[in-house]
Image (tube, rainbow, N blue to C red):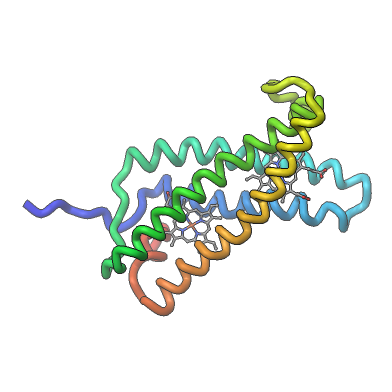
Length: 178
Ligand code: HEM
Ligand code: HEM
């Protein structure tokens, strides 16, 4: 008997995917645009940076469970093997990125000697104060943040290319409708 293939990603994976995109817009915007607002608002934007970033971490952990718990659909028509290999490598890189960024940011704040404070509530301190470590972690956080722009742009570009030029179902299987 032929194995039935799922036509779409599972609904939890679809919802988490697009919610994560919104959180990424938030996490980048809050920190990149903080220079454009008055001093009073800067701290609030940094707090939201933490909230969005920690939310990405939590959602990614749920997403990994959801991914193992559901069938992953196959793109129709099937792309060449090299494209599938590139796509899998890219997905893996995106997962590493989504896990590494919040962890680095969180540990850097702790290493600078502060708890991660989210609107008055302090999250647990995971490493002791160590200014030099804080500098290192923040350096890596900033570098990977820049690499993240490239990863996301290439990933989104590939999705749109598949939809509008190759005309396969890659994008449709990540949409909740249609
Ligand atoms: C996916 C999640 C995240 C992304 C994409 C991200 C991205 C960024 C970017 C682009 C910057 C600016 C770097 C620069 O100006 O050189 C930044 C700075 C920073 N991030 Fe994150 N971040 C994330 C999560 C977090 C989390 C969870 C925390 C802490 C809980 C955090 C703490 C910080 C801190 C303390 C700074 C420096 C802010 C300052 O200059 O005053 N980040 N992050
Ligand atoms: C406009 C932005 C985006 C578009 C158009 C887009 C589109 C897509 C599409 C069409 C798929 C399904 C590919 C397939 O059929 O195999 C997909 C999967 C995926 N996307 Fe995106 N994406 C975007 C943003 C992001 C962002 C910001 C992230 C994370 C940083 C991300 C992470 C992933 C991951 C990890 C997968 C694999 C499926 C999963 O495990 O959830 N995407 N994306």
